Each structure stands twice: as structure tokens, then as C-alpha cells.
Image 1 (cartoon, rainbow, N blue to C red):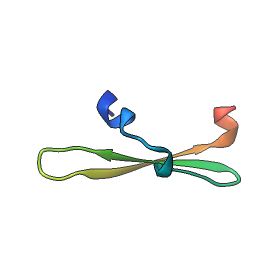
Image 2 (cartoon, rainbow, N blue to C red):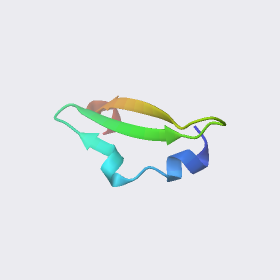
Image 3 (cartoon, one colour):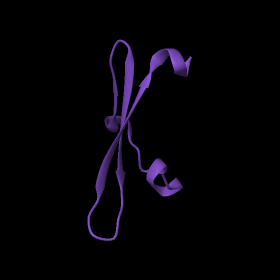
Image 4 (cartoon, one colour):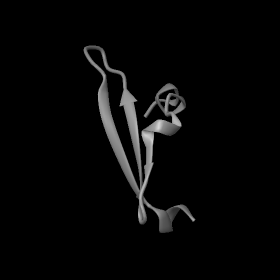
Length: 46
């Protein structure tokens, strides 16, 4: 992931459930944007 892709993450792209945090990243490519989803367990984040 490029820094510009990470900086483009907005709070509306972050979904929090009871056990997981899902981050949706729109990665730019030469032809079309790619949606990339990162799922993290909350226990890892704390």
C-alpha cells in the first residue's frame, strides 16, 4: 500500500464490529481503482 492510499482512508471506510475492524482501501492502478479490504482482530490492535 502506498502512503497516498493510506492517507485516503476516511472514517466512513472503517467498519467496527464486536470482534473485528474492517478497513476498505481504494488502491489506484493504471486502468481502474481496486478495492482492498483489511480485516483485523481488535485483540491485535490493543
